[in-house]
Length: 419
Length: 105
Image (cartoon, rainbow over all chains, first blue to last red; front, side):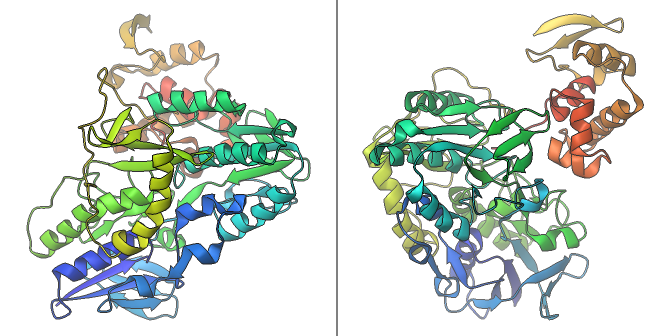
């Protein structure tokens, strides 16, 4: 009887548990999922809440209900993982022993790492939409906003869904246009990167969309202090950006227990794993999926989904004593809301940056181009998430590996993750 | 790509001024590279960061980001910006003769 323990009942943990259940009957393996609460939040939905579209209750479901009935579910916090004895220590001082451990506890917001962020002005004129509380509070603030300077600030990478702050700008632009007060609102995107986005061709395109919409772009800004009372972002080099309302994306770290678990995580609490097999670099019977993994891929639900197939196969192979499948290619697929019921789609992996064309083949959704079809795709995805992705079903036309057909490979693209 | 002579050795630098072959690096070269970045002289504190960047690169295959540098090098982020005003990770990597630290995606 194999003992498989999965820490985290979010996107990655849930879909892996359900897929493992299809391979192993209840007599062959016990599959246990642990999470600190029973609220499974559809995180992409947080983007729309500030603009009055949807509420937290509409995008939250019980974690337990998303898991097959033969999977054990435990609502407890994790204190630490002891790699030497293959043991997970839980908050109530009980423990779980494992043959295989999957780390799927995602990323958390480290608001305390930025001076002043949660000081005076926090939740009054400094907010984040990356939490249910922040997104909900912003809905009221934006509704009552009559004009002034709004800054959207990414403090540092990596962050979950790196396109979400850009989407926030596009949606805010459309929102204030619709209200007829766009001319009274100054929108500024403040990023530590040297362009709007990390990937060169896409960064250029998104930068152009900023210009078209009159959204200002401040690059290479390394936020040192958020001065809520004084209404300014202050960089380490002492340059400043003033604001009346700041929407800040705090720095991210791995789950807190990782820091207490010797040998498990890196300096930021993410789990170093092989880029292609997802196996821990320190412990062969530990794997990581989704935002928790330290990989050169976006922290996004689509990545967790694409990793799922390889991860489940590798747990199976590991328990059978076979060589692992090294085929995860870093595939990312993201819809980018551009406002006014349109969206772009980007699709890329470790080797290939986002390119124009169509997805998944020469006939399909337009890539890197605004279209209403992509917006409908993004909306439809929430249904697919609860009903197909989490239960571990294969999605029609969607493959784990990035499709090359349909993409316009104009010139050889050398990919560089620049800062 | 440009070829130039640093501390008496012909080396290649990429378009952003990073050493193409990190194994060619010498401490004498670091002083020239720092001068190109407007850092003169290289103080003990600068060297601490430069050596740390280089050892991390040799151990892990990539140099640390500013945030990781602030957590692990023993120099705070504030001090790092005082030492390397144009961006600590990027500038220190350049002086240490290692590739530009990878950002995230």
